[in-house]
Length: 474
Image 1: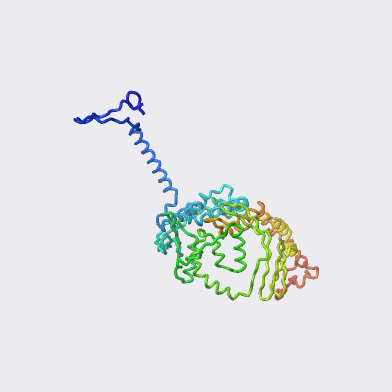
Image 2: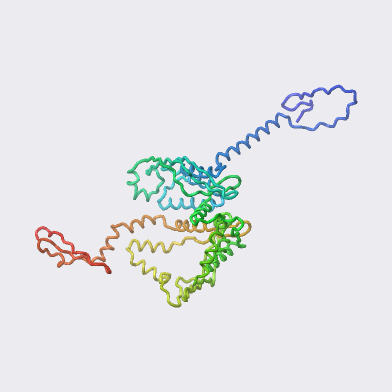
């Protein structure tokens, strides 16, 4: 801005060069547009450029920075060697990472609560173990955006200090002596990774794929050709979360493998969708000769918000099954099925009364522990996620979430009580109460020795008699 004198405020008088001489009359001059001084504009551009450069630099330094498939593998191994468990996930396919990340953090918290891991464990830097890798590798393009990395050589130098591992109070109480015996150890050995590691390209960056690595290993073992990308089983979801689980359960009952695959997420289970054509025809052929059938007669579901999806649980289910002429009916809410016809399978364990009878045969400490766990209810079910407006059952999330639900439901003192229940001192009374005690006639001294006859185990030959010297004075 300018003041009345024509100077830029704060920057002194403005200098305007004289116009060149001309014989033409001067045209009318429009009012001058107020302009920002060139000095301020230049400084602003410079600041913005520095900020942009800084953001790019930070992103480059903190991200996976995997520009080649080999870089993805090296980055993952480097993070693992640094004890950075969460950093390892940074180099895993983002479509698969989300299904694993919550299990890693939540499961670690529950293992710390149970005394297995230390409460202050840092998943970005797990103490007590580290490694540095030298990796020679080459990659093979399977198709655009998918490549396998073969480690051809290299070495790994590992450092382990058991005393510094982030172990919890329970582990240290029962293994503390053993942990401190060895002391720190350093080893260097050749790097042996024989199986190819699959990598995928996402947004211009290569990541390690767990699903494609497993699929490639299975394909190579079966000596099958690469699948045709155009023959991939499409993802066909359901309009809502409960409908996805209902469709999934009916497909499971009908052993409709193709529909089960369709109901899995297209990103998380991309490898399954792509590689399914290699095994699906054989599976269908084998199932066409089955002699059993299962039908869901009634189904009641319950849905709650859960993480990045929904948790759908089965409240009640009714099932009618036929196996080799034998029918099995499970009424909704019942734990004891009704069996019609002969069957070699004993289904009595389903009935509620059997569990109590089995528990009573256990030692007292273990029986009490099992009884306490019977009242524990883990929040389990199918984890369903939305993708592109449709809902899919997430196998990875469902399995890992089920494990975490059980861990979370276990009481904090469970391991301590379990150890006490299996302590030999507590088991001896239970064991010896069933062993016949020798009577006076069994302890008679004859020719300087006492001969004892041990009890035999049903179905086995009788053990030989045991002779011991007579006590002094006999």
